[in-house]
Amino acid sequence: MTGTASSEQPAGDDLPASVGDVAVPVAESGTRIASLDFIRGLAVMGILAANIVAFGQPFSAYMYPAAFLTPHGEAEGWMWVAQFVLIDGKMRGLFTLLFGAGLYLFMENAWAKGAGRGLQVRRLLLLGLFGLVHFFFIWRGDILFLYSVAGLLALLFIKLSAKRQLLLGVLGYLFGGLLYMGMGAAMEASASGAFGEEQVAEMEASKAEELAGGVLEAEIIRSGDYAEHVARNFTEHASDLAFTLFLFAFETLPLMLIGMALYRMGLFIGGLNQTKQRMWGWIGLLVGAAAHVPIALAARADGFDYYGTLAAFTGWSHFPRLAMTLGLAALLALWGRHAGGWLAQRVSAAGRAAFTNYLGTSVVMLFVFHGWAGGLYGELTRGELYVVTLLTCILMLAWSRPWLDRYRYGPLEWLWRCLTYGRLFALRR
Image (cartoon, rainbow, N blue to C red; front, side, top):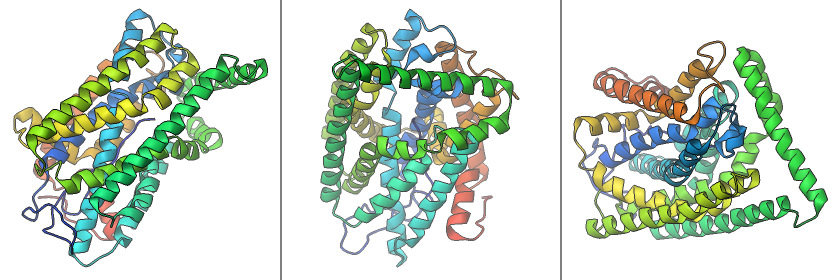
């Protein structure tokens, strides 16, 4: 699953002057970091582009095109390749980096007021509750629960120096990559018969069970039986929460630590040499994209084999994805600091209301796809799902700016803030 995090911070993305002997960026109190809002806005729309298949088709179709309930031909196969190279995992990676930066921003404000980690712990526990509601009652592709748990773990390293946070993040990501590549290789070897026919039979049975479950869920969703849909999430998919924690643990926590470190080093506010930042940004983006291409083409040449596509997503693309994610972060941080046109302002507003836009998108998708509303689940091709993505992104851009012109926070940002501090905050400007 792909998912997101929120932009909610005390008084926005405020920059305190300093905290003890820790070197931090200096800016006037109350000033938002424009690049963070801008990147969040692009990421929350990009996450929808990644997730749209799992919204409108069985979950297995996210990686495995044969699970589509509509035709998936040559053109759709090339769309899979394009999405794999350009979108999948990169938007989640950007959001995770920004979540790490946001964790440190929040703690800067807490430290400046003489507080400790308690408020941040409460905030993350609340995020986990939002995630559980999202998972069971709206859409089980939730990532907020994962962010809650990983964020609590990241707090253990919050007072390390930026260099040590960066080192731990890189080492954790490296370990995760080796682990996931090993898992991918083992899956493909097992499916090809390297460990005997009995193992092949077991894997085929597991695949058939997964695909049959997707078809059954499609029937439930199409029927409009929301109660049965929720009940199935509780009875059949509650364990998915633990699996998601395992599957993404060595991506999410390391990226949060890297995000903390990059924020403290000045990536998002012009604290690094901009010429070098631009150069390394382009290198990361282009090298990472180039490394994705043969992985995607190999999956296509193999006919989008079930375990081959799974290995491509979870194993082989792990390191190229990091290069692209960091390259995008570097380039968008430079662009976002000065992007002031009408479209950029709306993108930034979508980023300021990213929590609302992330969860709100899932609610909109309920109305688009479930049988008791729009009834389009399993009816749209990959190309048509991208049209839904485009229209929903336009909706995000359309509402976020006018709302924030009148109100201090997005609706869910305001609710999360009030619950975190245990009091009501003024919403209107």
